Length: 108
Image (cartoon, rainbow, N blue to C red):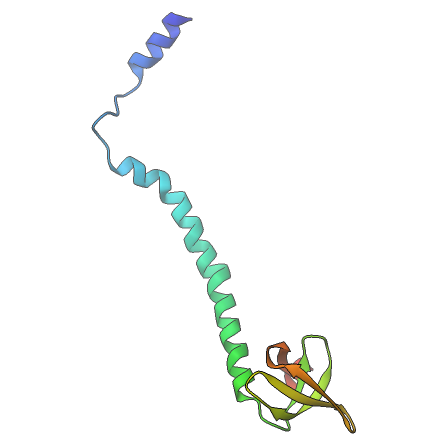
């Protein structure tokens, strides 16, 4: 057994003092995975959030919207942090501005 071990150790190449690119090559698959995650998951999600934020900023009184809870309504008043929706004739609710995701025209 010791004889087999000594043969394998003698046959193994010496790596002392040598190859600096060997460390980089071992990290190459991890770097590739990070790049793939960025282009296929992170970047599209950031673009979607940016589009939602632009749509919220463009809303004005009279627009039809859908909330995150599925409530359809018409914007009556917009504040910095909330908006007032009319969901039926004379029925108004105040909701957080961040809970509005789409206009009703886009949801059809």
